Image (cartoon, rainbow, N blue to C red; front, side, top):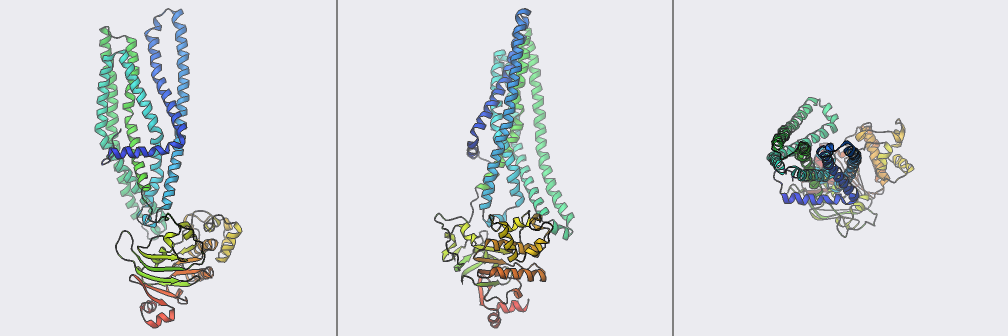
Length: 587
C-alpha cells in the first residue's frame, strides 16, 4: 500500500477502503469487465516479446522456405494481438471512466442529500468554499482512484510478476540482478512516501482555504467595492494563493527527486543488464536474442515501479478526498425526526412555549430561560427588544431550526419534536430581512413556495403580494432572469417576491423576521401592506427592530435578558414605563 498521510492508522485505512466497496455494487459488470480488459491488455504486452524472442532466437536461423511462412503467420498474430490490445485498452479507458463518472454522481448525490439534512448549527461554523471543494474536486479525485486504482494494480501486478517469471526463464542470474535493482527502486519510493503524504495533505488544506476565501470575496463583491477594499481582498487572496503555491512546490520538489531517481535507476538497470548479459554471452551462458528479449522485458518489469509515483499521487489524492467525504457523512444532523414522528393533521396554528430554555451547543450562555408563552390561532404577535435579546432565536425554535434545551414547544398541541420536520415546516412561512433569491427567473423563485404550483397560482400569489405590477414591467415579465441572489431587483421587489412565495405556500403560521427594516419608506409601505394582507387569519410572529412598525399590533412581547420581560399592547406597555417605553423613547 502506498505511504499513508501522517497520523492515519492502517487499520482505519483498511476500514475506510472496505466502505468504498458499496460504490462498486451497482456497477459490478462494468468493474469486472474493465479488469478483464486490462488483464488481457497486460497479457498481450507480455506475449509479444515472447513471440519476438522466438523469431529472433529460432526462426531467423531456419531455411527461408521453412522460416518465412511461420514468421509471417506470427507477424499476423502479433498484429491481431495489437488490435485486441487496442480494443481492450479502449474499452478499459472508456468504460472505466464511465464507471467512475457514475460513482462520482452517486457520491455527489449522497453528499448533497446529507448536506441538506444537516442542521443550522453545522452551517453556523462551516465554510461554504470548503464544502464546495469537497463536493467537486475531492469527489473527482476519489473516483479517479476508484476506477484507475484496481485497474492499475491488476496491470502492474501482471506485468511485474509475469515479466519476472519470463526473465528467470531467460537467465535467472541476470533476473536476480534486475530484481535487486528494482528492490533499490522500491526502497527509494518507501523513503519518499511520507514526505509525499505530508505535502498532499498540506496542498489539499491550502486549496480548501483558497476556495473558502474566493467564495466569501466573490459572494460579497458589492460590499468589497462599496468599501473600496479591492486591494485588501487582493492582499488576502495573495496570501492564500502563495500558501497554495508553496505546498505545490514542496510536492513538486519531492516529485522531481523521485522521477530523477527512477529514471536514473531504470537506465542503470538497462546498463547493468547489457553489461552483465554481454559477459554471459562471451561466456556462452546466453544468446544475443535472449539479451534482446531480456531488455524488452526489463522495461515491463520496471514500468510498475516507475509508475508507482503516479499511483501514489492518485492514492493520496483519492484517499484523503474520501476521508474528507466520509467526515461530512459522519456528521449527524442535530435535528432529526423521532422514530415515532407523526404528520401534523391540525391546521390551526396554535403555538405554545412551555417552560422553554435554550442555549447554543457551542456555548453555555442561556439565551432563553424558562419561557412560557401561548399564541392562539390567528393571533398577531409582535416581538421586540434590544439586539441579542433572543428575538430571532425565539422564532427559530418554532420551525425547529434548533431544538429547545429545556421544556417543550408545541404546535397545535403537539410537541414539535414529535412532528415530522417536513410536516412541521410545511405549516410555517418565513419572511426574513435578508431575502435569498435563487439564480433563475421570477416565476421560478415564486414557485419555490410550492414547486408543483401552476403558473396561474404563481400569478395569483404575486398579485396578493403586490408584486404583479412591477413584475409585468420587467423585460420578460415572470420569465425575467433576475441574476444570482436576485441582483437585478431592488430590496422591496425581492421582499414582495419572497412574500408571494409564502402566499403560494399558504401556511397557517407566519414569521416575519425584521422583514422591512432594510427598506426605504416607500418600499416599506408597500411591503407592509403585503405582509398585513398575508397575515390575515394566520398565526403571526413579527420580529421588529423599529418600534414604529408594530405599535398598532394587538399584542407586543418585549424580550430582554433571557426571556419575555413584558407583554401587552403599545398603550399598556407605555403606561408601565418599563423596557418598551424606554426603547420607544429612544427610537
